[in-house]
Image: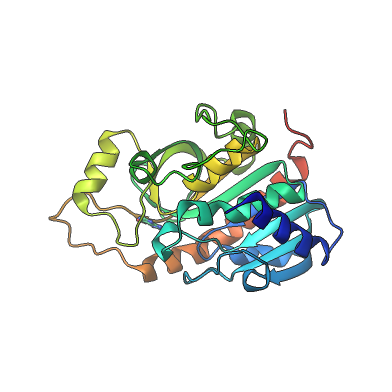
Length: 275
Ligand code: HPA
């Protein structure tokens, strides 16, 4: 994906609205209804030049630009994932477009399996760090030529999850914080992988977010990421429990109002400019 492709998407969107977003918000699996709180224009991804189509269930595939709880915001109602067959670069294309539109702060949400003993279905947990075997083994969205005008060749992942934003979100949402393990999917993790991820200190597991965080940090955006625990990950082959998509959708219904009330408190008090 070239900078030309980003510029083409930006110029298309500029033709639809003059709004310059300060905040970008990505709504994960089934969390899209939060976008109903937004007054603005909605553009299907399919209409935006270069945008990947959202094929995953529970991902409407619309970019909404408008005011959310008083702040100029661009919202992705649904995201794209590696498991849909997109390259890491394609997965992060929308993040690059939202940054080029003006967003300096990226808020990511996702549905995740809980691996921490305190996790309960329906909990929100702030992400403080990640582990991605997929990225570590080559599926890094920054792989390939780097334009130094866009960002540095090597990007630190220390403090990638903005500590001040995380503390703020935790205070408002009464949430724990944890480490998110990223898997490429789409198969759910076998119990043996869950045991490995737990041994490595991970608390949550899911199939998104990390490529977007890497691209956002490359662009210098501040990042806040929040997981909704939709199921408890199984770590023993002896467990009779079989993780299903239906379980995830049921839980998402519990989480939606919690996430909405957190965003109602959080969005208005997010800092205006990068620290
Ligand atoms: N694993 C991976 N992705 C997920 C899960 C899970 O258990 N729950 C929701 N998304």
